[in-house]
Image (cartoon, rainbow, N blue to C red; front, top):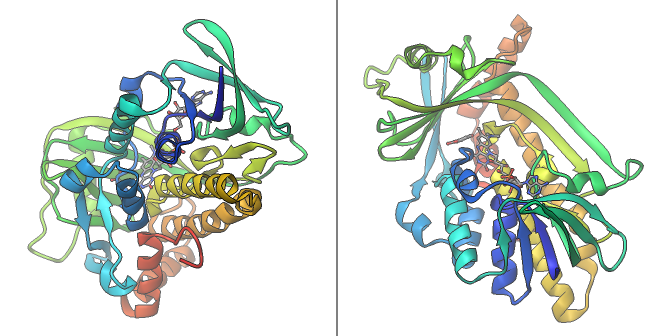
Length: 395
Ligand code: RFL
Ligand code: PHB
């Protein structure tokens, strides 16, 4: 098999890239190891930055998002029984975010790709990327029990944190920067309308809590739990009781709405960056190259930024012969990636309670929250990062 761009992985990065290339008349093949139902059901991100919404719309994948997505103009910080609303558009010159689940973004992109795009093979596991530094990099893969090879002009590894693409970069070229956190998130979905119409990020002595949503009738919520926690160890009542405690406030108008929990899972938190994001004609995009803890809601948005950068660079080369943007892919992406790493780290360490936290750490957290809620410049810094860093610093 032969194609111009071989894409490994049908998460948001791979699927959007296939769509951007299709729209520009560039052929691609997407190889996805899991089946369609699995990819469409995997519960993950919920927040799309303004720039991500704009990109999906421009790619022709925004119809249902525009109908069902929930635009949010603010988020709440809750700490010391207080509620503080961050007004996103007022602090950023009009930018906001949209609640529209990753599952839905993937469903929309899969439907478009299967309707009129290039091949999208489910159950096709990439085994290795070979000849990355030649003009014909290739992907060895297994599909329906048979091994095959996809010969490409370019390979884009969109295969997430556990993928194989990254391993094709030689060890003496790779540099890995990472940090673990001594806690995880227990996430739930519940059939109950959200208790608040905006997201609530809560810092509490018992640990972090986040109240989010999937729709006007479905709540998504997270609790900081110890590393190694088994979701089955938490009963539904224990989860709601703990959310109630961590979201406590002096505002008498606040109540937590409880309802049947329909899904529970535990996610470890980590920061990880692989540099460079390009080796020869192999490009890494999304979680294949970098992971952020979800507290900043940045992972999916970074993945979108990477593939837009790649698609623009490839088209520039095709249309003008200028290889500059393709050559600069790694540096261009990493600049934005490190801003998201910085922000996600700052949000995580400001809002979570480490098991070995000292009184000093506790006071610093409160001082950071105090600063954000009293100094407009600090609050604007948070709002700018939350609504998204520009794809191109000149934008
Ligand atoms: P994905 O989504 O992991 O997709 C990779 C795909 O590659 C496939 N694959 C392979 N296919 C073929 N051959 C192989 N050898 C393969 N190995 C793997 C996999 O099956 C999969 O389909 O990566 P991508 O596309 O880079 O997208 C990244 C996002 O999924 C991720 O960053 C976000 O979900 C992170 N994230 C959030 N991001 C946000 O922007 N906003 C949020 O609000 C947000 N909340 C979250 C999150 C992630 C979470 N978890 C579970 C990690 C909340 C949570 C709880
Ligand atoms: C979610 O709704 O899943 C979500 C929202 C905000 C985050 C992380 C996850 O920071």
